[in-house]
Image (cartoon, rainbow, N blue to C red; front, top):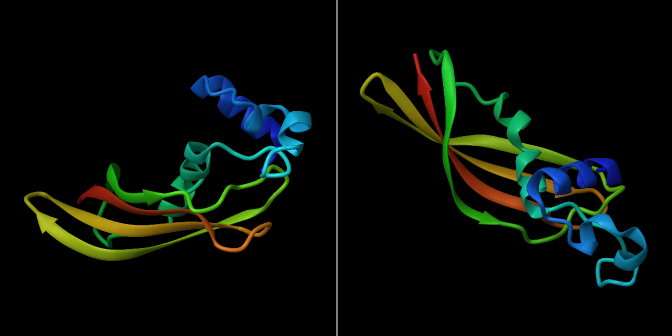
Length: 124
């Protein structure tokens, strides 16, 4: 995670809190430096979803999230990795809906930075 990425997200979201954009001031915070926005951390998981497939699906859309949590911050300069697995697939008329549990962990801190259950609709 780079300061430039966090700064770009701050500009897009309008969230310019010092813990995200002011490294000097953030160094004196409990985080010890700047951190990524929680919603930026969540959005980083989008590419992970591409790895989940329903065999006959040609189109997949985001249906929503359940149980989104941000147990730990993702520090600027930290590396992260994302994992996801299909928890269930439910067939509905002309489509299917799947649930996945997505998790992002920061290598700079122990424990996940994001945990969420995501729902996706897929059409054959």
